[in-house]
Structures are given as structure tokens and as C-alpha cells.
Length: 498
Ligand code: NAD
Image: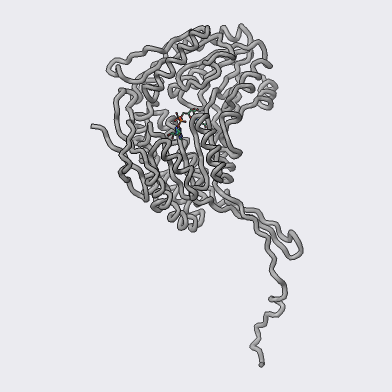
């Protein structure tokens, strides 16, 4: 028996009416777990109309009252953490603890957004001309939409929704059709927290739903996170339709390992960052660049020793280091990418293909895979594989290592491992990548800094979370004000005599 999921419109779960559904898998066992409805144009238009009406009252609340509702939501999400993480693990495939991290990193941004009363403050210039004051105020855009990827079904929707809601927008989420249950649970928790109906809605669907959101004139802003071709196409369409857009795409994150680095620390960091969540993180370290032959030989030996013992297994088995990938197609795509690397002549040090787990023979498992001596013209270096595959490209010196991430098509995250402050400083200043870690493998900035990649990893000029997010979800109104003088001089508190 598979479950049939719903949309969440106007404060309630609503059955799909398009007649179209997609299968949602349980990747650990390889079976269909649910059917998710794929919204029609009419269903999306209805959700937008509901949002337009609901937004007026929501924006009319003062920011502090909105923040209190967000605070109650955070508390409720913590109370329901185990249920959320279990559902997330079951549909995505990441381990239970990692799933809790997915929820937690989303909640941290909602907590930051509770500062909306401060973050929405405008500016004021007294006497900007004689008798004139100039001031600015931030106002919500109206209705905003978020289109999210499968790999963070709690975190990314909350990064998109938190600032939008806190600023007084209504928000429509179009989550990934591969793991839609957690977004629906979040919608229910928002309702329990006191969010008025229609302010946060979930419309499940595919390209048809996204196109309907992009075409609707009442949708004023769109946040997208997913693969680069779709990010670029959504950015272009949104701009052509006069909408504000921030669209984040794929990645190929490098770790530079200098000869003076603590190699044990770097190897440990690489294991977690390359293979955690089966490599299905936009900030996964998928390329290691050891500098110098000695460093490379030592690093490869250490990483191999640790990686060969990693346990890929069912998501909810506490002994699993990482779980399955999300779908059978993802597994086939990753295994094809490994085959391409072999054909291109990279040295396959560890091969994760063909993994079979007892009792879970149909699950979508790929084991840890390592390529050494890859070169920068190979597809395993150029393409985002989005699986547990670490590609090692050896560099002769610092300049060659710096050039690799700087010249790569993607520019999401990068890390350098060194004990030398001068090397680290030079690297962080010159590298052409949006988020940099110094001896930190996955440099996802905390909620009050912004998150966003450069080059093909991000389209639009404002990042997610941090202060940028409030600029993205609000429009600025500037007011120039003059009050004619004289009224107060004539004011009299004495009863006129005639
Ligand atoms: P995806 O691009 O396949 O899907 C993302 C969203 O777009 C989903 O909601 C999907 O339904 C929708 N979509 C798919 N095809 C569409 C189309 N033709 N038109 C309109 N909408 C469409 O991405 P995914 O596989 O779900 O997620 C993995 C990708 O996301 C990776 O490339 C990863 O690097 C990237 N990602 C980036 C970041 C970041 O911040 N840069 C964060 C997380 C994930």
C-alpha cells in the first residue's frame, strides 16, 4: 500500500486534481513509498489567489507578531524533530543524524529571521533639505515562491520561506517531487504555530507547476535551488517576466591540501565531506588537490585507508556511515560517471560500484569511490557527479592549486588545509569561489552570514540567508517629506472671543 500525498493549500492538505502523480521512493529498500500529486496550472493559480488574499492581513501584522509565530514554529519543529528526521531519512536516504542536521540548519535561519523587526528597519535623514526629511522603509514584495531540490528537503525550503514570511510575504513552496513529505509536515507545523491560512502553502509538482508560478503575474519573487541548467533557465524566465529571482545551481567543490597541512585532519575532513550524505550535498568536497608528490602520495594512502572501511547501509541503521542515493536513476548516473572516469584513464583507487546490502538488495547503494591522478580535462573533474565519488587532481605548486577552483565552471565552496596563515590569507583573497573554508571542509556560513556560490553556482545578486535575504524579500520605498510651517504658530488654546 503506497500513501497518496497532498498539496497544502489554504491551511489544509488538499488532494491533487490533475490526475498526474509521481512515485516517491524509499531508497534504502528501493520500493515506491508514496505517490505525490503533480499540480496543474489551475491548482497553482488557485494557490496564488489564496496567497494574494492571505498576504494582506499577514503584512498588516507588526513584524514582532510575525516573529512570535516563527518562534513557536521553531519550538514545534524541535518537539517533532525525530518524526521529521525519520521521514526525511526514509525519502532522501541520508542517515538519521544527518537528517536532523538538515532540519536544524533550516531552523537556525528561521531563528535569525525572528530578528525581522530589526532587519526591516529603514534609514532616516533629518533635515536632508531645509524643512525636509528623507527616509526609507522596507516593504514585503507580496507573494513569493520557492522551488527546492531533493537534497535538503527541510533546510532549503526553510532558508527560502523564513525571510519571506518574516518580512510579511505569503510564500508558496514547490518542493522536490522526490521527497515531498517533510515540506508537508513543515506546513502543518506552521499552521499549528498560528500561521494564518494561505500564508505558507505547498504546491507539489514538476515543471508544469514551476512554469505556472513563473508565469503568474502575482508572484513577485522566486527563489530556486537545484541544478545549474534549471537555475539558469528559471533565472532567465523570471527576469523576462519582471520577477525578482535568486537561483542557485550545482557545484564542484575543491579541497586544496598544502604540504604543511595536518594530513590526518585533512583526510578525516575529506572523508566526511566527500562521502557524507552519499555526496549529495551542494557543499560536498568532490575534488581534492594535494600540492606536491609527497603530500599526494601520503594523502591518498590515508584517505584510502579510512574510506575502504566506510559502511554504506540503510539510512536508519545507526551503524551506517552514509545511506543510499535518492533514486535508481541517480545510482545509474553515478555509476556511469565512474565508468567514464575509468575510460578516461584516471586511477580508480576505490570502486563503490556493485554494492549489495543484505536484506536491502534493491536499495540504491553506491559505495565510497576514489579516483587518483585525474586531470582537468576529464568528465569526472568537470561534471558534478553528486554521489560518493572523490576525484584527486595533483598539483605541483600553490599557483596551480589556486587556479583549479578559480577556473572551474562552478564556484560554490572551496577549502584549503594548511598551517600557514599567509598561504590561507592569500588563497582566501584570490580564489574565485563564493564560500571558503580554512581547515574547515564544508564552509556553510552560519545563518547570519549569507550563503551563495559564484559563477555557474549562482544567478542573481543577493544570497540566501543573512542580511541579503531581507533585501531579496523586501522592496525599498524612499520618502521625501516636507511639512509646511506656520500651523503651530497659529495654534491657540484660548477660546476665540469672536
Ligand atoms: P533539480 O534541478 O533536478 O530540481 C530542483 C527543483 O527544480 C525541483 O523542485 C524540481 O522539481 C524542479 N525542476 C526540475 N526540472 C525542472 C524543469 N525542467 N523546469 C522547472 N523546474 C524543474 O535538482 P535536484 O536534483 O533536486 O538537486 C540537486 C542539485 O541541486 C545539484 O546540482 C546540487 O548541487 C544543487 N544544489 C545547489 C545548492 C546551492 O545552494 N547552490 C543547494 C542544494 C542543491
